[in-house]
Image (cartoon, rainbow, N blue to C red; front, side):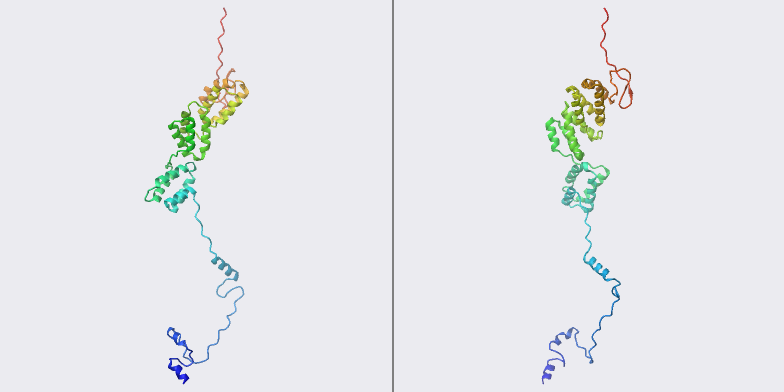
Length: 322
């Protein structure tokens, strides 16, 4: 009777309660009778040094696992110049164009501030900043890009101190914008020159134009002239004359000052101011300092080795006998 009760519930002999729930998912018991299959035996022995199928040693397997678990770090893009990065982030510049700009700006250290100022101005309110930037980078490569002229505070102070004209101030701002890496030297040397001249605006404009046109690589260093002035105690007139010579011979002023120092030492230590006036015409015309004094007879030899006729000192006329 107990057996029948179990069978009436839809259970087969030997089934435990709850087994009917899984029969719809392919879990029907095996209907064939017979002893159960033997349990699986131990795995076959592996050859020493690794698996039969892997072909790897335990060491290599562990190394592979370590390398797999520890992936190589991704290579980072090279860091851009801070100011270039700020501009590119602001205008959402394409990384490739940003890299090109960084490379070109690195080649233009003298004009970097004015170049970037110009780009900020150009890219503002542009529909496609990256496209326009690429065009401007091409201009940089071709040497056709011109940066913005910046108003420099130190130039403004110099202009106020020497009452420079607007033209002179504008020229100096151009110099600073195009020679940023030389700004300190340029302004220090210019200040030294302006303290010694009668027309500061004219001198500032002239020197700035020569720098901008490439006629001068750098402004003359007046500290060398000041050494000569102090050493030989030049008069105020001779001092200004020496500054005039330095300005006229700006590209080789150091050489001329060296020649003058030797000449004064050898021939005119106590009358250097007078002798400088005698030599001034020659030096302003592009000649060299002679090796021999002008007041001696014969031909003088210049320090450059060129033979030149030397003037004679004029004599006062002798009174006629009565």
